[in-house]
Length: 193
Image 1 (cartoon, rainbow, N blue to C red):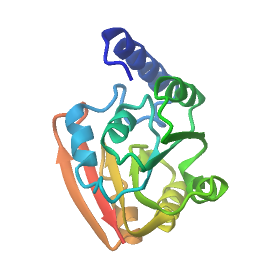
Image 2 (cartoon, rainbow, N blue to C red):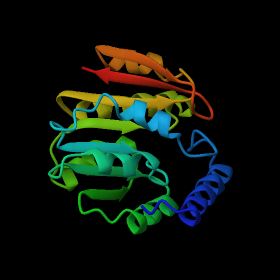
Image 3 (cartoon, rainbow, N blue to C red):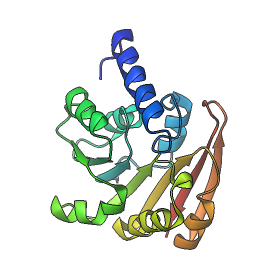
Image 4 (cartoon, rainbow, N blue to C red):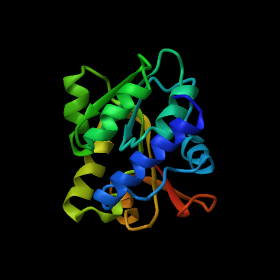
């Protein structure tokens, strides 16, 4: 994605406008800071990872960084429920390794099957799971665990800890981190079976 101010302003306007229309679907009114993105992606073994999945890529702040860092043979599946963001990502990130799907994270297994993709090495999520109804939150986390390859990890960033209990019920190991250099400050969870 071009790093010019016009592109950044369009990205910010699209993100903020969608936040105002759908505040519970986005965790923040502005995209994630570079500090948060770096910390979210720090656990990824870029040489080993061949399939990464991102839930709720929004305007592609994290997506663009994943594409920059991932192996040339790796693939990235971005699952987004917002049609405006899906169109934006398809237009602005024309990388052949990226596949943007207009669907729900709760359908991750079905999407992988439909696209003939293997289990994911990493699933990265910035969707505001903590604000979702308990049943949906548990469904997404459970299906995420099923969609991970052996040794895979679920990397979650949130602005509250409300998702922690469901993560701990579903994963054998949940490591918690904080990133204060973000607006708002974020909590990160590295989840492994």
